[in-house]
Amino acid sequence: MRLQGRVALITGAGSGIGRATALRFAAEGARIVAVDISDSNEETVAEVKAGGGEAIGVRADVAVESDVAAAFNETESVFGGLDVAFNNAGIMLDDDTDAVATGEETIDRTFDVNVKGVLYGCKYAVEAMRRRGGGSIINTASFVASVGAATPQIAYTASKGAVLALTRELAVVHARENIRVNALSPGPLRTELLMSFLDTPEKRQRRLVHVPMGRFGEADEMASAALFLASDDASYMTGADLHVDGGLTAAYVTPE
Image 1 (cartoon, rainbow, N blue to C red):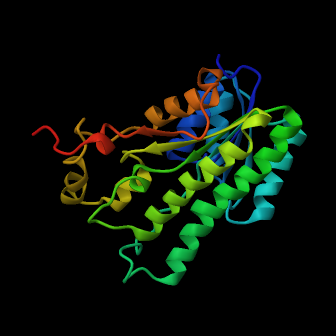
Image 2: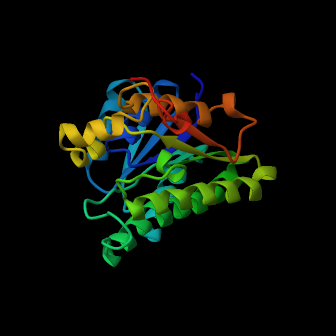
């Protein structure tokens, strides 16, 4: 019960890492605000409640500041405060390739969700946590922010690099306010988002050959890492980039 009595807002809570984290946080005693652009977050809310937890769902597009502000307002209105914000929502578009071929619309939409969405989440989380006396902010980045790839997704990669820079800056600015800000950088995961992109055995193997552990990660494993960052176990961590990537960013040559 590492989050007993705490209030956690999670974006992208309708699927993947977000849903797994909502369920894990609830099992650890947190009251959950499940935010998603679709009604899939209501399924997450139902799962939390079925397990005996407390949760509400808020439909919001994180790229729209007024939507984000409304989600945080609803959180404080219903639960009286905010202790953890997991800015996890993100997109990865099919026509995001290299710098020559990727169009302006794809770049703009990717940055609107992956960068501005995180920035808005941090902005309103900081305001709420100041009223609470502190808290933990977790931003989902990616291993691609730390390595290059010959299978480029240039807008996505650049957006996740921006998330890391934003995380470090906010961590330093708010360190004396008892507000911790850390990034979680997953490796390639067996989620619906990535598997729909890696839709052939060849595409999947092209990635797996670089992962020392030889498999895709699971959303539940990211939820465990997010729980660590949210809890007092990480009380002396801020401005960190926690890689949970099967050893990918540590590798030069992998086992055969």
